Image (cartoon, one colour):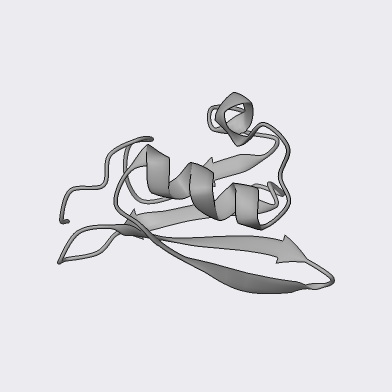
Length: 74
């Protein structure tokens, strides 16, 4: 399993992907992203500087249960 602090979970049956961030020893749910734009907004609100630059960096973001950048229903 990855130690990336940001996890974009598998697509839900209705579309979108839950986004969590590991900080302060726990996982916090940032919301459900339906696009890369949503994901960037969540990460900016969590204090990530230049979130666009880390979306494809496996040290920062782990994409689980589906291809990166795909938010269609499972």
